[in-house]
Image (cartoon, rainbow, N blue to C red; front, top):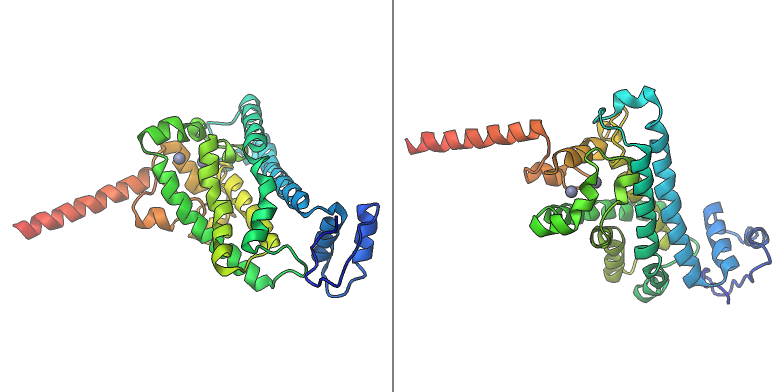
Length: 307
Ligand SMILES: [Zn+2]
Ligand SMILES: [Zn+2]
């Protein structure tokens, strides 16, 4: 089978016997940068686009998720970093981290390993491109920023909904097992929650492309990588003077999500602080006090008016 990875259908590169040889042939083609050459060599060498896309996304998820969790696992074992731990009295034990990792792996293989093979046919149907060359950097940056904003809104409302009665009891409670989270716990959740909140990550780009017909698989790779980093970092349990939200104040980060796990109520958004700020659902004692003061001032104003 020959891959359809080249936009220019006059280019037909047969797969060589090794990936390296395929890559060397593709490097002779003009106008492709090194990432595009690697991408084209990968699809050409595999020779089956459905399998290539499925394998790529499965590996991307595993490598980025566990790869990003590993530094936090190591930092947990270095006493120097203890002063930056938000809930410094609650260090995750080896047993807890191991159990969490097993559960996450089972969920990845049970929930994700099957639907992922339908991903490439869906992409073809709605026009998500996987051709080289890639779109411009500015268009990829715009789409990734948009996905961050839309996913944040999706996550805020559905996560807030998951805190109601039976939804919490039967679905979301699993994710709240760790009142002091750690990186690996980002995807520790009930399969229904994985699918529901995961839709914000995977479904939103699909819907975007359904209406615009303008999206590349490589943009989705960047988006998923950054979204995974955001989710793992938000669960890291560490707040540093150099944490990203000090440079971009609307960024949520670990400080924001740790408070959610600590208090169980408030801070429902994933990447940004706007939704919780404007809808008065911020977590923590300071936010609670500010809310109470606001309500008190409002009540006093009303009482004055009535007099
Ligand atoms: Zn929650
Ligand atoms: Zn969480």
